[in-house]
Length: 260
Image 1 (cartoon, helix red, strand yellow):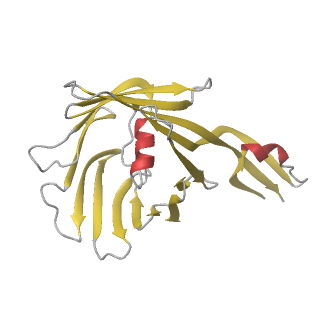
Image 2 (tube, rainbow, N blue to C red):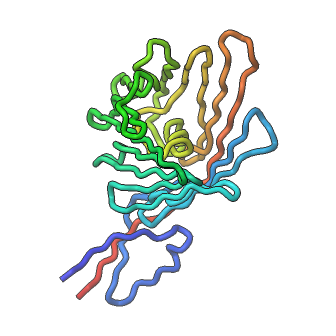
Image 3 (cartoon, rainbow, N blue to C red):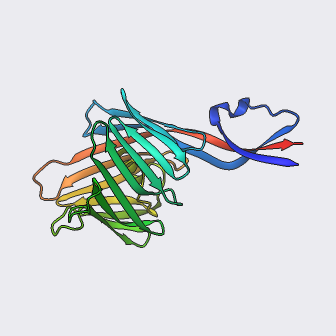
């Protein structure tokens, strides 16, 4: 009888693995690489932010740390994640596509809480509703997401109001990948992703601000960095430039075959 188990071995340690006479390692062609460090610099300032990301053996993020502060991720089941960030705790529920359907936010020492529900058509998030302390959402407590094919065309964070700051997006022809706009902004800014697009964001517009997004790549094609230049199209303020530089940690997948 043969028993097959899948596990992950760090690339740096892969050459040190020596199978016994009753076990055989079969390397798989798929390489797993995650961003381990993000360095963020704004408008060329020498004072940069360096964020370190850690992962478990399944490639799931376990911490996002900067200096003495850290956001931690605990996986209670395959579809439930507890995200702690200082005094704030988010209890997140995922759907079968690994996207967030419910975020219950609580702050230590407070009895207040916020439930945010996300609704999907397949893998495309279409709307969200915010329930503060269990109260029915008001006009400003709705998100609206509109799609053009498999790419998000615009996001309205206060869809119930008549005048809001809708975000509009355009895309380049490259497929979405680790290190692109939505990947990084969701890792840094949200407890868990809700947006999954087919292509990489090229521009973002809100009110009179237009952000142009460009990417740099390693020779193997992996994204090595991202630059966002935001311009006030009225010309009343100087452009703002934010750069993101990535370092990766890679794992190799193996099959372990136990001969009995």
